[in-house]
Image (cartoon, rainbow, N blue to C red; front, side, top):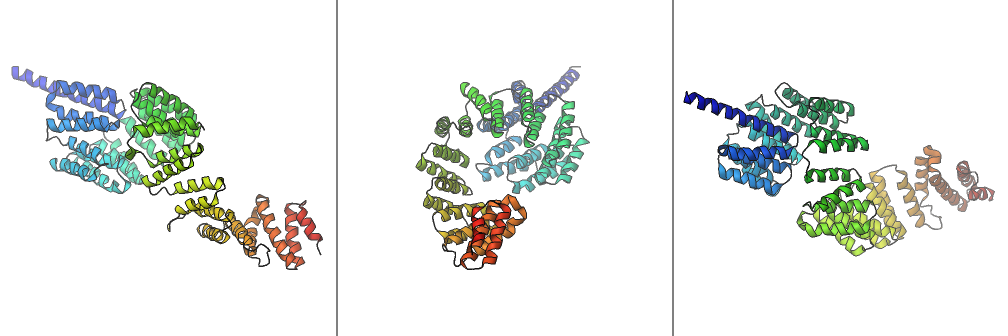
Length: 520
């Protein structure tokens, strides 16, 4: 009898622990991280034999909340408790990959080796890393792991959902839908799967179908916070900003309310150009001494966009005083430069723009911003110096050459200006401003118009602009004036008069054309 009671008690305890774990995972799925943490901390105390597993879940929650140091602590505690539990090695691998890919991969390999690559939880967790965090080029690794997971346990709905996510990242919509369909036939979280379908159609810009699936998910569970976030993102993409904010506020209502969530909400407002509202939230977080330097980073940008440059400078300098310079992004230096430019601190601003390029060597447009600043100041030599720095043999943006060409033109370097406008036309044939500025650059090299250097470019300008009629009135008048004058000094009145008449067709009161026709 005693043995039967002990057995029954053990079974009941097992069911209770499983139920608590399942509830905690539902909380994690719904981003109710505090509620999940409470369960796992209690389980850690009540069931020390499974401590390594609970340490992993606590670490996973911290990682999802972007608290890397705390995540690492829990994963390491899990390894100390039981070196044979593979998931904590997965956790260490995930948080190590960004800083040390070799060490991170070693941890992944250890977890896979320990489980002989036959544990769906391990395969899913590593596969999810490749979906959420890794470069797109590494997605095939995640897909291979997730396929293996479905082969090992074809009834694991999460394996199919994650595989569908991976296919979505590769824009393979049919495979994505097929994988979600497999999950739909299994026991699963209905709101989660509906949300996945909704995101799939949102990525395809099918707004109506996306909303349909999101609403079906909310019909199954109106408290499922992440769906409101996705609706907020969807409405934002379609510029329905009131609905976007309305849904994001609901998202905040249903997930655990904490300072991290408030910061994410402020960040959402910031990214959606609701700068004044974002500042209000950042101010509240600062008052509560929220420990993140990114308050000052984001708020500085908000102040800049609202033309409050003194406050912007104060915040961006506070940010740089609090953050390790190696962690600052190119955009941080860029905005510091922009703020200093607005404050008239040119030399300091240029240092920050240079730092932005040093941090991200693809950001050659920073040189363009410096060049544009000097161009607007009328300092064309310095404008040319910086605009030239952004050009590489691979540069394909016609705007870069156009702006450089204008700087050369106003610096009276007409040959170099013409060369830049040639490049504009090579990259974007038949763009009218290319011919307009080639004409002007050549006209400047032939001030008495005797050689007619600009004539072929003005003629081409007329050919390109004529179908647009009045839309290009000023350009067509300029081109015909040049041609009329050219034929006048070369004593061809018939062709000169034809050009003057073209002008009068556009502007019947044009005095130059009226006087030109009177000339003998």
